[in-house]
Image (cartoon, rainbow, N blue to C red):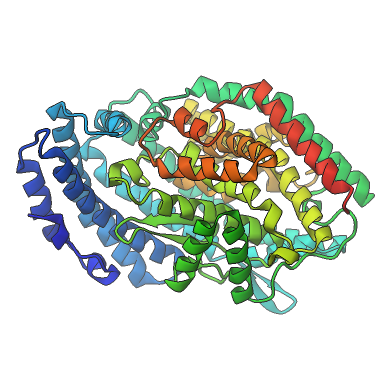
Length: 571
């Protein structure tokens, strides 16, 4: 049974049932494997696997586009209850078949290593628990996505409140921040109760997979072969040594320029020179056109990719009620297309978010030529996937001015560049906070099973890493900030990737400051490798070193602070 008979259009893929998939899996399981047949078998398997994968992601995307549509949620739940478990079981049989064959297809070594890790933690006993976990995260998204604020007679989503934090009038910023916080507090108990369902579920998943604890399970699940939990803790310490003091300098400079006694959480976005909020675009069409111009100048291929996404309606950028929070880029692997989802704010944050998600999207295009299990979401190291996105944020920086068809005057470009680079400096301590918090959660499950203890620990770690922001009198807001960090709920242990990738991206950018053309060529080459080589080799292909020591971090901070100083002369 040849995979070419599988549907390729979205409607037909969404209509598939397990009975449609099953004969294909049965035929592949029965087909003999040899050096002569392995390539065709892999092609057929890849085509089958990417169809099931695309069906899942199209269902998932629909739940985030409209969190209030009950029919969409029911269709998603039907998939994860009826089709996904059967597909996972059938997929594992094919992985076991390949591993048992002893064959090592060309450029498949990395994928085989990952399949062995999957086999170690695979058990059908966990299917109902994994389904329940996905449902809980859908519930979390519904809780956050349903929140809104009435501001001067107008209903706004929490994302739509964000631009008010750029207002020069401090009282407006404070009122906006407090209005958002008030809405979040209303869900405090519900989110805490939801958390207390997540944790025991995950502990049971690890136990049934034969792992000593959930972190050990997550390490296998995330294919973390090249660094350990102890390396993460060393990374936290290096950040505390290098980035926390640098962040303190950023916050202190901001406090002094604003002429305020202490820096409060509503003082972190406003321009310190008293400039009016920058509005990079007026309409969504203008936003897309300017993005296309920027991407085109980084590399004509990127401009072409973005044009395809506009033409094929692969962008959902507007902010609206009952839309899930945050942003993402997901691969639709039959179509060989990405789908990008963000919540616009009409601030410079939108530009950076779209450059970031654009990097992810172009990664999908660049690796489309590779077999699914060397290409896809499943085996692509997230630590490098984020180099693709964070690297694009920096590689695009020379092309964002209006004279190049972009968003900003030279003055605004300097302002936003400082904001971007200071944001990198202040992000690394926050990343360390999130990652350290997750290590604590799963090292101390008897304590973290109580949401109140999580609140206390989060506040303690906040005081360790987030030095320079005054939360006095706002202790409850500080304690519950983790509620808005969706990774803790939906992607446990996924966050250190951002920190590791950020260090890689800064190294790519350092190369670009010396030779932009070569740096972009190396970046594209690395993207095209997919998951065919190990993580350190992906970094090396992009011209970076996979590292998390204090010396490497110091070089990154020095470059960031040097360029900030350059930009200061242009304001």
